[in-house]
Image (spheres, rainbow, N blue to C red):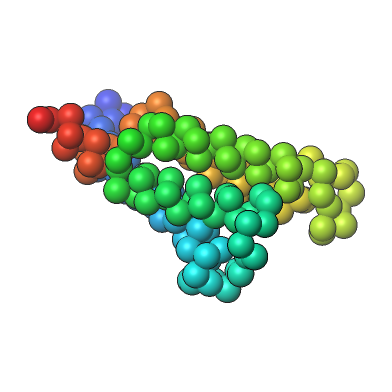
Length: 141
């Protein structure tokens, strides 16, 4: 029973992987757009402020590359590293919610998005961009 289900679902894996990549790339891209252009959220960052302004540059560039699926593995590797650094420098040890137990847990320190993006990008490092990526088109030539 499960083998038939697995076989039916497996044929959609490349397309679903592309949807996953596009979704995570857009999340990252929107973070950068918010920092530089106050769109779609108002999050103005002074030019050159460390580390947020530089993170915004990476988010714009890497988010675009990941969304279109160009150099997906290397872009996702760098993005995963950026999110790991963001978690440990901006969230880890913080306790804005006043919960007991300190700021180790992402739900306590507000780092859920950083952790989710970090591991989502890490998955893309090992799987690639899927069937509907510029990398896939370049590989066919």
